[in-house]
Length: 127
Image 1 (cartoon, rainbow, N blue to C red):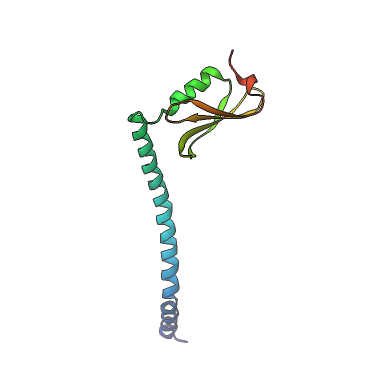
Image 2 (spheres, rainbow, N blue to C red; image 1 turned 120 degrees about the horizontal axis):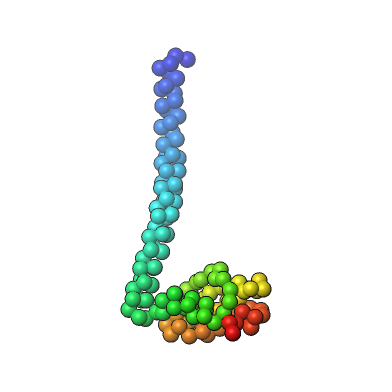
């Protein structure tokens, strides 16, 4: 096979692959767009929450954490802001001095402690 016939044959094979390559490109491109869209949506969500805090409709997280530090010993492992039964709730997971894991739930609007789950919570109370 001469070089010119080889390249013509190769060109024909590549042309036959074009729809497949285009589909692969679009799938990859859509995945990239999804990867970028998720953080953008999360950023917008956080901006909304910051606006709620600035407007005084939600208690700022540092207020909750300061209260916990004043009343309980331990280190914060995780904080989540969730909606439970229509109520915005801060869930703060802490590890106590004896290794116990305790979750504190606060009403995000009032800052009121509304629940505690875990073992040996009393050992975490500051005296």
